[in-house]
Image 1 (cartoon, rainbow, N blue to C red):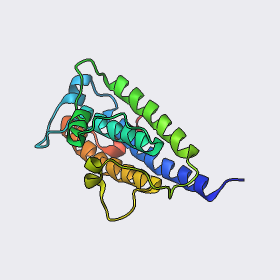
Image 2: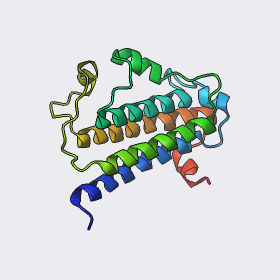
Image 3: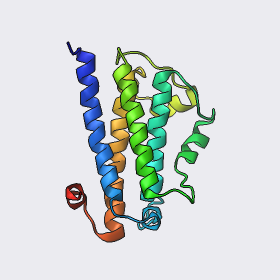
Image 4: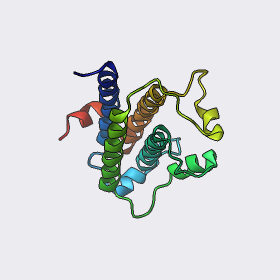
Length: 173
């Protein structure tokens, strides 16, 4: 029998998966140089944006798991998350997204209590504070918020690169 927590976790993963698909679509058919291009007033490229989002997802996995694999300086960790190495390819980034998304789904499916309070380092908590407890559910919803916000950025960046729009990219194989 499926529990309410299991049903909710699957719903959250479905919604987050839709955001993953949108970001994957924004990279569809691009070269590494195009993915690194900064075609607008923003300082974001699709490559750096994707690395930032994957980094946030990895941090969330660690926090929910009770692990601390990150630098203790949250600003340093945040800045490092935007970095794109010279040898990174679009295919490699998408593979990293898929592997991280799988780890995230596995971790969330193993969680028996979405209301469990998660310890967040004080330096990172100031960036997340919404006046509510940092529960597993809150952290998942925050990831959905982050991915949805940045999916909009990705749409604009991609359209600025070659005119491709999200609706057309969503239909591409």
